[in-house]
Image (cartoon, rainbow, N blue to C red):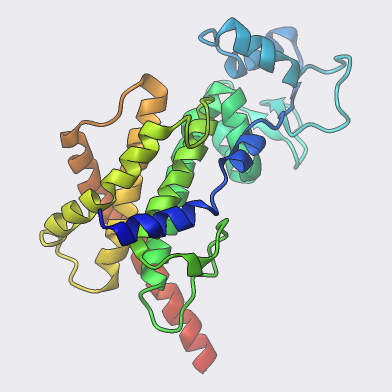
Length: 293
């Protein structure tokens, strides 16, 4: 990796503070349960606090889950779950005992701002929340790559914790945003967050920056989507997505993707990235046409 690229990444890293991720992840998230029987309440608790949890983790999280009438219940809960069949307020969520993944999806869709602390505390939210993180960061990188390649277009649509002017290259931006993804995935996985705590992951991301570009060039010639911005955005999406998949597996079972799995996942993710990049360009064209009208 060139000295100038390392300097660009170092400059960008100065704007990326893992402490913010730690604080967000450690926020206590309360869940209130409403059901018409003790058995139903117990079933909801068993879903939120599965038997595979350690005793220490259960002791930490159990006080965040409340039954009706529990002493010390907060006036409002971050999430309130109602047994299916009961009248459920608009601000609450139905707990589908036969399809609890649907409940998880509903909560994450409507309350994305608490996805990371929910995932850290309650295992059923973990994998879906991490998948959302991977998808979001991958889309951000695709958006940035496409938008910064266009004249007179600034990627202001992205709410990122640093100034765009800090980046002299797409590679520096993509690399640092992947570091942010690594922090978020670790936090959602209830693992330590930070540069020293995740030094192997960070080193792999930085070291792989140019490796992914080489693989991208190799595969780009085999993808029948023509030249221009769409393949560029698709490659940015795919490279980030595969890094995220590897991190998710690492935190879940202790090891990442094999080289063969990475290549297979990359080829599939390029197709998704192509769709993302196409939507970005279509949105820009529509806005420009609206201004011209």
